[in-house]
Amino acid sequence: MEFEMIAKTFQGLENVLAEELTQLGANNIKVGNRMVSYTGNQEMLYRSNFCLRTAIRVLKPIKHFRAKSADEVYEAVKAIDWTQYLSNETTFAVDSVVYSTEFRHSKFVAYKVKDAIVDQFREQTGNRPNIRVSNPDIQLNMHIAEYDCTLSLDSSGESLHRRGYRQEAVEAPLNEVLAAGIILMTGWHGETDFIDPMCGSGTFPIEAALIARNMSPGIFRQGYAFEKWADFDRELFEQIYNDDSQEREFAHHIYGYDNNRAAVAIAERNVKAAGLTGDITIQFQDFKDFTQPAEKSIIITNPPYGERIKPEDLLGLYKMIGSQFKKQFVDNEAWVLSYREECFDAIGLKASLKVPLYNGSLECELRKYQMFSGRYNEVRSEGREIKSEDDRRQMAEKRRFKERRAVMQRLDETDEEFESRIRRPRREDRDERPRKFDRDEKPRRFFGGDRQAGDYRKGEKDFRHKGRDFNKGKGRRYED
Image 1 (tube, rainbow, N blue to C red):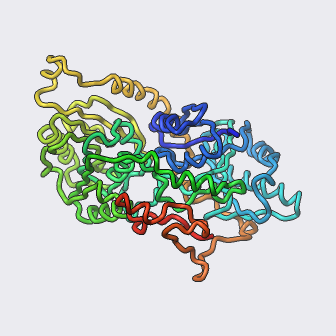
Image 2 (image 1 turned 90 degrees about the vertical axis):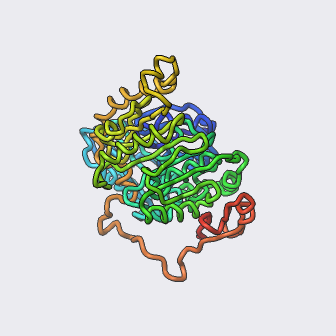
Image 3 (image 1 turned 120 degrees about the vertical axis):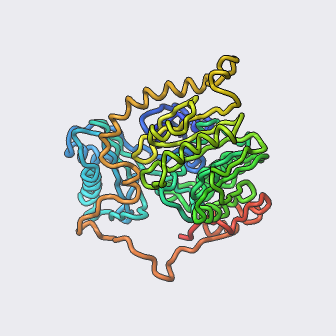
């Protein structure tokens, strides 16, 4: 049976996500603001969480309704038969995202949703389910755009950008979903070598390797919220998890460089944890020492913006980047994500494509530089193509992106900020507080193929025959 789903993403990546869903076989795909809605069955829900590279989370709507006051939200939520989803023994949590002049506080909206559910159970059973802020049995999401409300089950739980391979992070690490979206936006799928000359903790190289090999990003995850649902089909998800029929060989190589030795060490650990040391080389090197690669290559990089990481000479850094592109990257293409216009000006090269993207709260741009020998005017006079039709199409998206910016400013609290916290329960709601595991109860990580223990991932042997050591970063299950 098909039902509606909503995949949430960053502003600017909606079309990339829609293309991913098309390839996944989703139906009735509709692009919205920071989200894509679609329909599919339970298998599609599982695959969406496991396979999508540019989704932050996947929601399953319970109810759409309009409300002009907090009381109307309360009544609409209370009218739902919550025994379909919860029991007195079930723990739950509510988060909310609000774009509205009427509803100004997302935490208050979450509070009203919680009250409606609790009051229904008290009236019907004399008891009530418990609120649990961390790791609840059921995670609910309320989204309000002006008066239009959508209450959904969150099938993902922890944000999908948390792949599971990152062991450590440098200062201001790039979000994995954004990194994957940028790579897909360039059209690169492993046809050439890949270079990130300022790789930090290695996010671009690792996401590039997963794309090149067509490995699902969910293979590193410990779990998903839907695994706690009453209708969870363990056998179906096991089939999805163990299906590597779409993976492919990668004939080229990926290089990550950084001039910070600590960052290089972190990137190497992250690459090792992902089991991708055969595809990725991380080295200590300043970009000013970069030389023309022997093979056809693409550069995708995210230099410092001067916000959280502040080089001594920010504009000098970007001037050096432009010089190296021009002198040492001839007949290749380079993509730069940055924030300040003066930084792009310092590069000193004409971009063939400018794509607006948000990196956290910063409105950035991803710019494409098509490198060639000779001067720009000479190349044009020779009739050589600089901008492709796809470049022109993507440039047209910039205007629509700017028009949506006003909506962003009404956001009371971003998904990223709300991701790991919700309203602190009142004292009477703290029937079951989050607690640390006792020593004897601490979850145990499984390695190997013990399916009887609820472990349904590939065995160690299956990974090693492809050069991926399961015991180094691929354990995913905790015993319940």
